[in-house]
Image: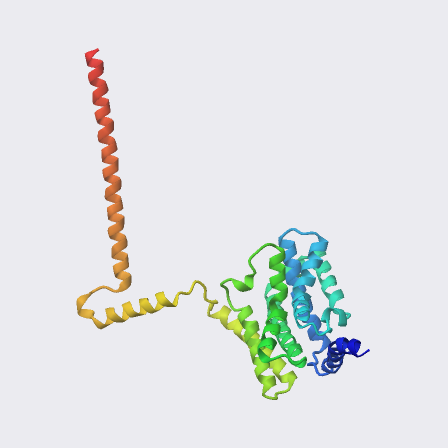
Length: 296
């Protein structure tokens, strides 16, 4: 009996903690939840349409994009509270959206700006709910940020993996995953300072949408192929060139252009010499043939 209680004790405590934690989660109006799910489902269904998939593929990718991130979060947390199972409207909303996009694609194909707006809104909302769920169940701030990130962009990541592509969130582009991380960080910081969850949720969505807007407006993209050693060396070369203006009259760009012109001139001369050598060889061969004919 004692041994069985010892084995069941962690499960009992987890269930008790889960029942108490569920009531303390941030309350989101059902309308906002459905907007986020529908917006993410539209992107998944449009992806399936671009890949010329059937109705089942459209439904699958709609569910994956809208609910896959939350499912991935719940699988990692393992607290026994799965959103896709506890919210009875979530799965039907994603499936109905996929069916509408599949049968009547003209309804959404011309509304790309509105869809993009609702999509980044859903990213901010999912970031807040993902981070909130981790914090409610006693996980640390870093885990909260990570769960917010997974909830927001995990569905898109799973979609790209199923299509055999490198996930778009890991490629150089305007802020999307970075915006989700920024929103999750803002939510965790505000909640840790004692701010109400609702206010932190609003700030999280605003920060996410603002980061996305700024990256698009000023064409700010996430860095790639960075080599700090080369950056430092280039900075030092420029500093030395600026410190000795009397020794050089050209900037680095001008010197590079001059080097390219010289190299092009060398290549042009080499081609001319090869062409001249080939013509000389041809003339020599013709003269030799002429002599043989005369001898005959």
